[in-house]
Length: 340
Ligand SMILES: [Zn+2]
Image (tube, rainbow, N blue to C red; front, side):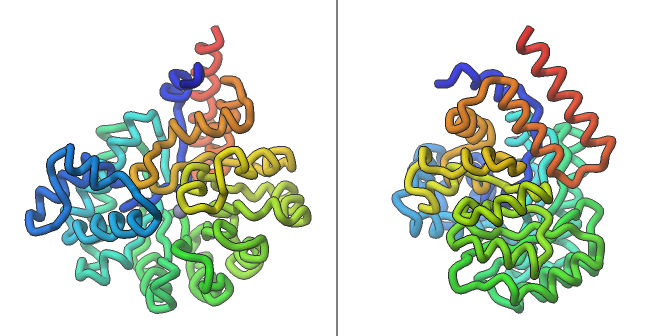
């Protein structure tokens, strides 16, 4: 255990790359499963822990889909969202841009308006009761093709909930070229949303260039392969385009062979604005605090270095200037107190 762990646990943090359904912890899944007794998902903690012990990536997909199957009505959506914020509050996460995939719910028959009202209701309660500020990134599930892109852009632009700040693209990269999504990103950007696609997690640097050029990405989800292209790294550094790095997720999906060969060191050395994130935390057996501990080890950081990473996330976020200044000040005050 790192001596930095208590520091990290208390550090006020922002998270920029974390998925809605992918944040369903065993506790939340048990609550959802209890609402739907016909589901094959176990409700007692021991059986659930076993269910959440991943054997391989195919098993991860299987578990993910059984959790998706538990989100059947607007109350499930509200409960999931609020409970995810509760898990965030426990880690001192003050602000999160949560990646939400409305298409997964609307295609299952939850009306778009009801879906949006459910997440907005949870957002307001989470802020008032838990002190966690939530914002949304509506993302296209790439594997579901252009129909899902059309539906996601429509919901984002027509309903545009108050908490919505950005537009994303997830799912597999292999066989799902980024440029085909350009018209949908153009619409979202015209509607005032920021562009934050996943790119370069399981494919090479060209996918990141495509995300930058065609989708006008302002931040890159993962961007793991950026270090294979020195010109791209220099471009990201020069333009201050942040990378949303998720170390344990990259290991779980085999984007990196082991944590020690994660390219985060090269990213930082090149001057790229690196942020630390957890992606699908319970599904990858991690949380944001663990990811900060991993990053601290890989980058050989002390408390000040870890605090600098936390401040990177604030800078890279879509918070307003006053919000950024307040959270940065809080991080500095906490760090100063810690250092005595
Ligand atoms: Zn992701």
